[in-house]
Length: 267
Image (cartoon, rainbow, N blue to C red):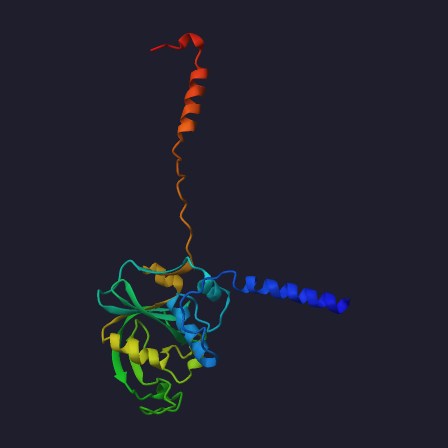
């Protein structure tokens, strides 16, 4: 009897499970659901960046909400862009790099940023120099230098040096530790997936392109808003129903009956 009871409970649970798993029904377009392992992790990071989500590489609650909510809103607004041309915003809160052309977003990518001990500075700056297959000097003797094309070169194969107020030595570049993308691990530089910097970011930038780096709050104070949220439904005005002929007759009859008999006139 106990065995039969357990089987009954299992069948009931199994019948309810699909309704729970697929209750939301909607799945936003993505390119990670059919992947696994490192490839899936990296594609989740890219998708999170495109959705203005904090980059983690995991399917956390916020990511699942964006994935399964049809009226989810992703919206960028720039009130005072520094140029009509192409430029960069690095969001330190979300670990993302956004390329803009004027006030229009043209690409979003996940990044690695500096640790608490060696933070990425917040600033409005510009690209000072750009190099393919750069050599690395080892931060003035702190580390062993690496030649161009050296697989141990932490810059990858692209470097965009930054001119920032009161700071030097910072840049946007590739990496040799892709698992760290989406975290705070660098000495202050901004690292991208090699594929992203080589094929998208580096080719679209030039010396002198503006680069703004800041937290959500700092960017908003500069007029850069990067939203990610469930869109609120607009309140609909009540629709006034047109009275039917029967309703009109009833209303007219009620009006007549409410008038004193002495006030009734014949035409």
